[in-house]
Image 1 (cartoon, one colour):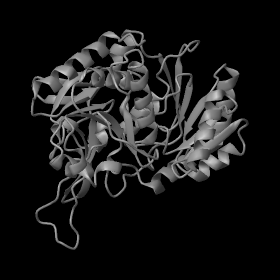
Image 2: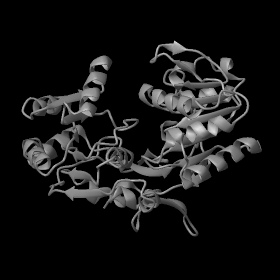
Image 3: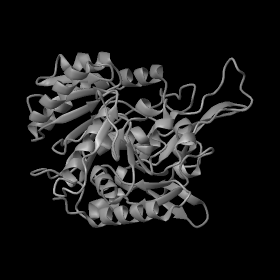
Length: 407
């Protein structure tokens, strides 16, 4: 039913070899958005013996990965169906192959000590945080859910992500700053090796991704200031920049032009619920969703967007991971960000191929493309002098102060 692409076959082969090797390290598969991670996961799990646990950070991704696995094994009656263990889904069933969320299982790790293999989707979400020895009893630094869980569960573990890096905050005598750290170069680290890397450029060359037309608009960024962590712009400075550049005022006209040119659907990333609500009231055939939307209502809104009764969807802090809508042909970045992960995930929503779709358009109103470069130019490589680094074209983004890397 599913004929694997060349890079998918290689990712599956290397992963199965890893699990069969009994190696002690925790490796990563770097797989760009639209590379078919759920298909790769399904084919890896299909070939493994023993008990397998697949972890993902959201209900949407869990359901997507579970359904893909069931589809892959549909023609093989010798393989038993998988089960789901998730409070969000409302099902807690364990079997040889179990799809779960860490929040639903981390408090009882002893129930999962019979697991032989673990796959973690969106593994950049795994915090390596451990307790600090010099913390006081009154204000202890707790180890992350993953660290606590895997202290008890000793299974071999493989991570998968399109963005194998995390932003980490540091303090110095002048205040704070932030670096983009590759997962295999964190201190402390949870993952320690790249098993396989696929670049977006390779997927484009293979015809597996839809060409992107970047449309950066003028943006004055002088009012943008980092927040107290140094990892993102402050809310106050983002608001000032949006107001100064009249971003919200310009969006209806940009949408009108896009649809007049034949675009069929548009996902708009905005900063606040107030902005999303305001825009949905003036833009025809539009709606908005945000992280605290009623889950059932949010699901209906997304379904209406995919069906086409909603042409424009204004989005606040959701639909950056696990949103699978290949027909989407336009996104508007109506908020600036210092997060490379967020930027790559937003652009990734429009990268998938679909019948009749010849390109994906990225209208950047807030200087994000200038800040990070084109997503297809991002690549992770093992430099003979510097070791593993993340580059955007010729610019090194990882292992440096973020303000310097983006200047």
